[in-house]
Amino acid sequence: MKPEVSVIISTYNRSNTLPTALDSLLEQERPPSYEIIVVDNNCSDNTRDIVENYAQKDGRVRYILERNQGLSHGRNAGIRAALADILAFTDDDVCVARDWIANIKCIAQKHPECGVIGGKVLPRWPGTPPSWLHEGHWAPLALVDYGRPQVISSSNRRTLIGANMIIRRQVFEQIGLFAANYQRVKDGIGSTEDQELQDRYWQTGGLGYFHPDLLVKADIQPERLGKRYHRRWHSGHGKMLARMRDPEVEGSSAPVLGIPRYMFRECASLACKWLGAMLRGKPDNAFLCEVRICFYLGFIRERLPQRADERFADSEIKRSSYFGRRV
Image (tube, rainbow, N blue to C red; front, side, top):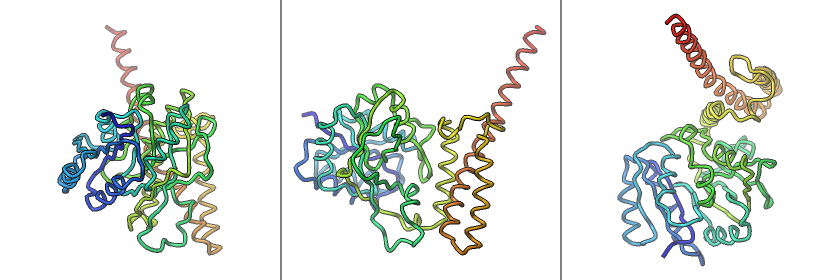
């Protein structure tokens, strides 16, 4: 019998948290028929043994191996293997609410015009978080709460997070699968595969929907409570957005060395604000400035090699044309 919902988890070396995620998926209240596809993205731990043990006990669990490294590759393997028309994505360090799958079906039925649906991703802290780690710093933790139910579209561009994201199969048939250029690979951070895919969909006029009743909770790893992790995430995010060439990030003025002009002004302004916050004894405000600078520097570092490669390619084309004329 064809399931109504296919749940897809792409996992990499998270055998310590994966069982908790699977338990939450198997302990659903009044769900429609569903399957759970766990994609082993070339793990080196005992992930396979864990998943196959679950599969022996419960036929709804399926194991898939995807050796091409990267979250997009893993998810795409799950999409190809899935049987349902409603594909639900979550992560290997997440606990879904007991009514998660029931709510997926209910919301999808109420909003057939929406191809992408998402909900809240709230934290499960390992201890008391540091005082500076308020909602303004949630992006590196892949947490989201947009509040009230709302339609997401090109005029209300908000990214629905892959830990709690439902996509109808017809969306992938329309715009293609997750792109590999923007994916998280192994323990990399700052990736934009969710944003890039949704942007492609919004550009076609597609609609999404956020509903707060669709709830999951993510385990926050202790290292993510440190400022070093947040600096790395923002730098990596800047790198990925440099690759994406998002018009809203690029700005309207002519770039300098391939870099949007406003970024130079922003970096200078943020540096002054950082210094002022430090002098006033407000380190939390200073850190908000610092991570934004990290984003811009990550963007610039990624874009400069691209610019150099483009100049080299242009010179090669001109050389080829020159020699072509001589011949």
